[in-house]
Length: 188
Image (cartoon, rainbow, N blue to C red):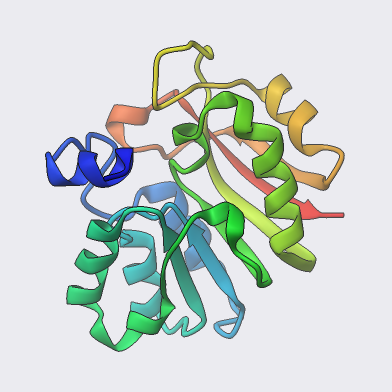
């Protein structure tokens, strides 16, 4: 059994906020095109997915390496079962207009970060956006979650993306207050 599936089975899901977090909700609320293709990688229990489909977005997909959270989403939204992809994110081969980031990046080993940036750029349509939250606390060898900094993110993403927004999140949930950066990167 993989590491993440084991964490779900044991109920070791401290990252799970139990609902969509404020920064992503407010970002989604300003999206006007309900037909865009959206991906949520490593979505866990998929509260962002629920929020999107409940608000009229029909082309929303989740990919997760763990089966348990996908089954949890399927129970809540059985009509969207075909939108739930049980696979390794790095093997995905299709394109999206928007990819939402919420605790997926910080769960990957830091040495995988260049591969993450490369894969995200390859999955986005022209002018596609990668948006969401990245942690803003010192990177250590202990994790997940693994931290990071503005300068690291600029170095990592600037080759493949135009940095539209990268700023301290003003509306983080309490446990993540002053530890998150909200970002919008547009693929070059």
